[in-house]
Image (cartoon, rainbow, N blue to C red; front, side, top):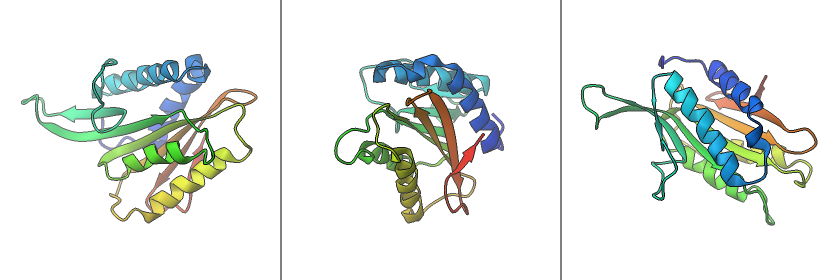
Length: 183
């Protein structure tokens, strides 16, 4: 992968693949997670990167749910850089429906990766305005974090399972006053 791949190009590729994948909008968190694994691993391999975890395992993940890594070719144990760190959270139930999603989103803050992706859903029975509330709270977390690195890009992939299932993607990078929607 070229070090300078634009966030817009990455986001468009991700959004195109997400919209084509009907499994992302089905019931069952496990099915949706496996669909995300398939999309992200295909994207990683097309860019010449290693994808982690390669297959479902009974052990814990490496740093986050999914990651793209670039390894030193001359030595298989030397990690050169983390290109993508991704967290999925499907649960938005309970009194404060944004808590679990924001907990996973905050895990991305201290990781040093070019792209930081949080994937979540808006359910059919979600209260009106939940998606906007999630984006606002994520932005507040970003504003409060003091150690952003130039060039990092945060992306929110929102799977809206209400009336007509759709995927939307939002981005944020240093200097932005809010998350902006990408077509």
